[in-house]
Image (cartoon, rainbow over all chains, first blue to last red; front, side, top):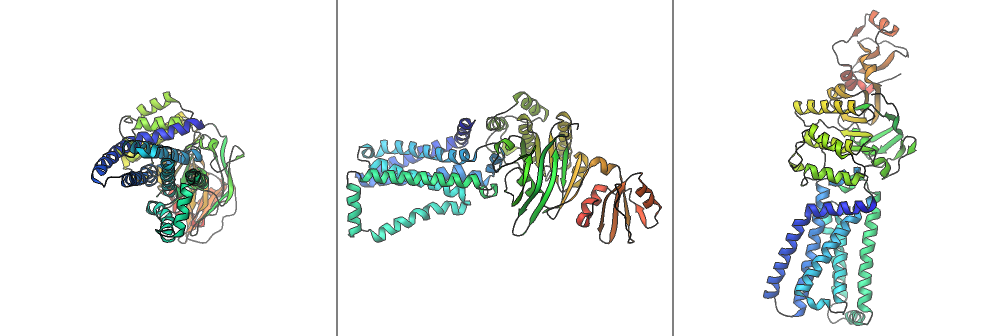
Length: 219
Length: 293
């Protein structure tokens, strides 16, 4: 029953949003194709473009998978059914993670194949995309649509701002961070830390949802 | 309406909000009965139904099903009831058939033959998207899902609100037919329109200001006589006294027809028998000072 609920809920999301997701991915790949032709040549700008498009799309997945359920109050219906709340929350993370990994694989294999080399950079960036996607799902589940849209950007924006201020170009902190990153175990640690962050986001959200009243899940 | 097994019991159930307090409520719901939950807007009907269906957590008290306490998120309890909110919130982009398929997979237990029969009976358009259905048809879709998964309790929150008179009558007929066909089904129907309850319910519960102001069977109400008096008089407690209240300076007494109390009140010059007034309507409007023996 439990396994069947996972399949049913993920299948329902794919039935409802599958074609839109496929269309968005195709459009984003076309955008990347055009962007890599127009943007300055070189690995850096290309990888940066691919990464940023992946980040933007995670916001789209969470918008479709969660915000629509909140605004249409379909969570209220699901919650009257004998559906395990852990499955209800978990299925959203799994579907979003599936979309993230699929688009990451497609976009990097087509436009940033360098990230597939065994340097660990690609995995680390994927974990970053996954964590941001998880944050998007968590924020939209927990908050109303307006706050849910802004919360992931604010939460990620703060550490990025601190990084720029305290570890900007020419600072000793930046050198230390680069040394950490280039150490033999550096990328593995960063990737593992990001994945741990993702797992913590999932666990906290699932725990919250099992205790939340339905009124907290609809707009 | 033959079975009288107690399906759900509320024991001091209470929910506090900053500006509203529901309960504490203690009442029971039995299989085979149709409960009409009547009350003006803001009386706490939806809050009560949300507590029963585990959408809200109680501040105090508990619900029991067949003597077993219902836990938060209790899937066993969720398999026993089906809840159709005031605006049934199915997925607009799924068709009727896809919605029922989704419900069947999530409920686990499902009678497809019954579902097909009810879809035909209600003339539901299987291939039409739910977003294109009227509210009345959405309610019927919810009823099909409820009965096909063999729910023991069907809970409808204001199902007739916003429906035109024809759709309202159609839905009431459907509910009565289904209740007659499924005699162990317990139906809880909330409304602020007392005609809805009068037509359908076997038991009437009136909520006012978050409190259970009145509860009686429809049979008791049908076998009762309503008296009003502008003079101050006392009616002592009696088994024949169904309810007593005052409303806008008028005293009202509801007593069993043909009882000694009925004869006493008939003889009193300051009491007028209200043949023309709907008893349910009088109760609905007058329960602010209800005193039930």
